[in-house]
Length: 504
Ligand code: ZN
Image (cartoon, rainbow, N blue to C red):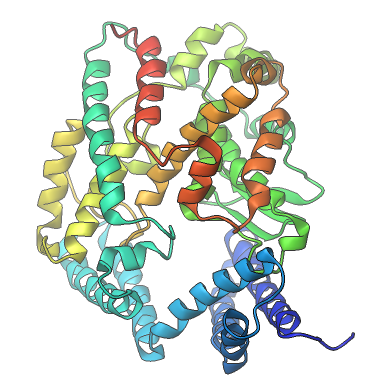
């Protein structure tokens, strides 16, 4: 190996090593969720903690600090891409060194205590028992935000940057306010429709092996490369990429809930295509990643909803599905099936929500977490506020905290500022998809013909290959000529579900 000849070459070497350690940690974590025997739990925890410590030390080392100082100041690299790589790393580095190690350790302890308590308290509906942990988490997140924030920056925004760089709570709130009012109105109109949707055609047993095969067929049609990735099973579907040449998806199949499994596969397939689409030459560098959680989620939601729950897709794939399940679906008409997979029904649980009501679950969480972090809402009042908002937005009475404010692990884990990225993903997905439809005038016909890869090519060029060269807001303007907006998404929902429910 020839020794590095410039500060940038040294920086690249060090970044590559850190990326390799991160990938090794991701392999361990993937294995933990898929194949690891239960007995391995404790040892695996230690192995992962050792690797995280190593990564943190390398990334915040004086060596890295000095290189970044030189490259951002007196010795900038020659190329624009190289300057960007330094900027991305410098931004992460500053965030990493601003939080004192003692606070990092205390936060890790608090999170693991909180999750342990939440795991026990949730099934027993014991919000009071978990409350002190939530208060401690919020207090620590406020302290972390104070370390991270730039002068004059809002605490919530400082945390939000960790998931969605460049976004602010105020901008998101402005978009979400418009979205909420229109979606609440749409849900009410759907509830009053004279053409209710029946899901009885899905209410039967679907052999899981055949579900698995059909899911793989769809993944291949999407362009997911099984020579550079694989699919396995796990309790909670997820995607993790070790490198663009090795991307892992998981799905969850159940004979009684056919649709959930297929849409989980397509959702994770969208994430997986993004990870496979990163340029090989960017891998192991600070440019070789996804732009933000919101942009990542735009890819999964596009495949799951805009393609997977669309009529053009099923015009092409329904006969194949009927061939896979002749006894179950052979006599079910396409229209009946299409309406069934698109039924709208307000429900208590976010992860089971349909396309229309999903955003309301997120908006409610965003409003609540922002108010709690700002100290405007006492966490002791969380269950009541939750009930009030669920009634106001979804028209539902929440019977208990288990299926109410304690249903998600996010707050128990200390993830404040994470929830809005799910809905940002939905909003971006529609803005991008409409642009794809305008750039590829026969896109719907291609999808109907089963040629899904035309869309994949477009996504590769416009989004995947960009890597971390742009931030989310910049990417949106580059592609669509507009900033993030509520209107396209609302219009999409009103049109699609207006037809399904025959709304005037
Ligand atoms: Zn996702």
